[in-house]
Amino acid sequence: MFQTFLTGLREGLEAALVVSILMTFLVRGGHRDRIPALWAGVGIAVVLSFGFGALLHFTAMNMSFTAQEIFGGVLSIVAVGFVTWMVFWMRRASHTLKGHLHGKMQEAVQLGAWAVGLAAMLAVGREGLETALFIYPTFQAQGAGFGPALGAVLGILTAVGCGVLIYKGALKMNLSVFFKFTGAALIVIAAGVLAYGVHDLQEANVLPGLNNLVWDIQGYEITSWYGAIVKGIFNLGPQMTILQLTAYLGYLIPTMILFLRPLPNSAAKSTTSEPTKSAKPATASAFSTTAPSAGKASTT
Amino acid sequence: MNSGNYCPRAAAALVLAVTLGTGLLVGCSSKAADSSVAVTGTSDACTAQSTSAAAGNIEFKFTNEATEISELYVLKANGDIVGEVENVANSATRNLSTELDAGVYTLRCKPGQSGEGFTSEFTVTD
Image (tube, rainbow over all chains, first blue to last red; front, top):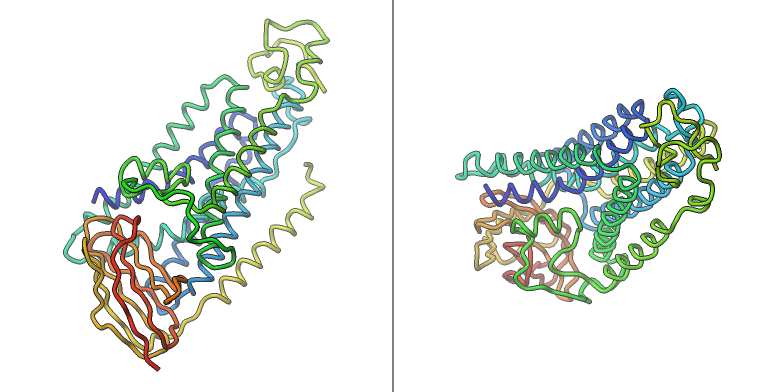
């Protein structure tokens, strides 16, 4: 039961983290009206994954191995592209928002509902099918009773619980730290997803080098508790191919540098109108929710 | 990113959905298996109920009897992966269906989903 618990946890962690980060961003960024779109995306992904998984598991329908791997690989790479776009959008949005005047957001950069829904759908759907195909057999495990199935469900619920904790914690963060932290976290997660996608395509023989390992760590079991967490969040497994590592670092390093570089014009235009309290002059001021009576935050 | 930009982006999303959907349909089939082989993975072995089958659509019913989560690979002689199932829990059974031509294949069970696992040979006859 513990084994299936860890697997459920590993499968659910990444999606739970991405969804909770998105949720926190919607709430703190004043995009609460997009929350239904987020949950619609999650719901669609769950229904599609478990529905398609049921077809594959319970009927004679089957999906060729190559098709499965190409599907997984392509979806992962699409998810990385999309998350990267969102992260940089969030970065610009936190910088250019023209402040809250009596809560009005009409000048705020709008985040389309479709983008939110699609991000949530990709985050959950990416490993949704694999999770469904893992769970169904645990309900049919002969001789093992309810243990495996219960463990699997608890694992997934625990992953969701972790997401909730991250959400609550992120709500309390200092705002500019929040944007940097969640953006950086998404980039790290996306790097892992990219490596995962590359591996799928290597298994499908679309990309070469499946057996050219850069590391093969004996004793690192993804079926252990630490393995579940590391693999679940970072997608770093006991074996890594050269192409995977190249993709991982090739994405992570430049993207993180670009993301963390100081925003243009950020320090220069501090408050030109009457000074607010000793607020930070740069990025945080744009999104400040603590200034109902203060003058306009700096504009760009 | 105003509402005026919805159309091209919605179109792009739709194209993606259609492409993925088509890919799924093309990659799937409902062919019944020509033969079925039970494979049992334990903590130190990977045993098939029969070591050969006729060429065609073969369904490997993989039951994991090791305590750790396991996976099964069907490999060609040159190491190419023809099929795999992962995340198979203890006492669970997952089916792996694949078209196999005549030749010698390797069944590899990996309890713990890492390392070399255990292998057994499988022959597909004409």
